[in-house]
Length: 117
Image (cartoon, rainbow, N blue to C red):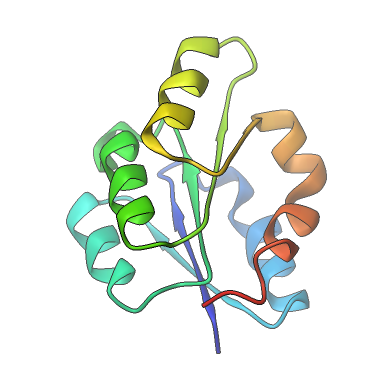
């Protein structure tokens, strides 16, 4: 079963992401550590979702690693963090949205990548 790797330490969205992934025939693996995330990348997940405020995982570096491995990525950030959004896009994140948009469109955002992996 294709997997979605979710890099976040705030598990506020975890149930919503897990439910959306299941609806699309995917499993979700939640990680908050860079080394564990890199290990998960070796299995070529269908998608990586980044909470760009997950400092413990160094999301910008992980975005570059996901890009190098040709793994699609979606990041979310507070709507006021325009600089962080731009840095994520420059690092290669395919889609970066505000946290509120992510919450509203999680199923759609994951669904865009369900055929990968």
